[in-house]
Length: 389
Image (cartoon, rainbow, N blue to C red; front, top):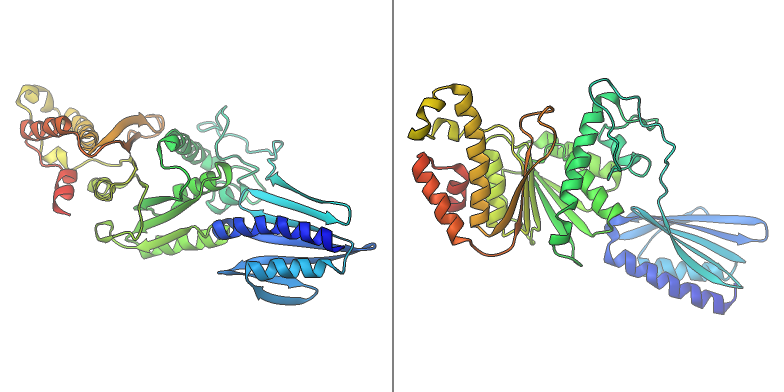
């Protein structure tokens, strides 16, 4: 190719370099095909932190992005044309160059709408909805988290879980416009377990919404942390880190934008909420699990004749626990909403608490909270954690 074409190609590649330097965590590979006459000569570059391992004509080199661009341009002198595909998670960039022209365009990952998802079971079915995590586009993710079979079908016994995680993404998506823009969103998953929701949100934010993000998973179990690390490695999700640690001992190095917790038992949910408050996180999302703490504490004389029935006392304890959690979040300056995460037919532990930071403190809400503590004769764990940490 002539020098004028190579000069134009270099300009396009400088744009590719900027993308790599801005967010190398989502870089997948770069594939190059040179053409001379009827022959093709192919090369591939793959990430090897912080550089790129480039193989061409049987030779492998570790190159910086600058060196790779120079090498691509220098090689182009000897060929009639070059086709280059720069692949990121969710997007491919195609560059084609010959002596007549240099063109570049983005290629979105195509969805396979014809895919047979599954034959639904009698008790749990795929919903008639536009899924946020779409089979076809998200196959690699769904297979890795054991929702989909190797041949691309949603497993019958995982349909309910698929519906649940997709609805979680929908509810999370409703908060996105309230979160900081034009910066990396850092999301902390407390009691992450195998981190399925973090992987799903990572996929959605990175590959669907094109939002730069970083995930941190915390759990005291070494085994689940190792499992999460392995899944992240298999998926190529380099914008994730996992730590085996008690969340009370965790001190982040950078600003945390979102703290989330799914089905953390009893006061473990309170620990997650308290951590989010202590870190002044922009948002907190929690789906509580069991509620035991207030059941043994609270009493209320006007309801004495009702609460003598254990089932009523237990159910009211659940409501009081999450109600007081929500009120204390409001007192700490969060705009708080409580929604049904999934149908109560699936599980009675189906509430999601969503809180977005809007101001420093709400004195009226704190006064109401303290009055409730006195009237109910309770000292909730969340209040304790906030004041003791």
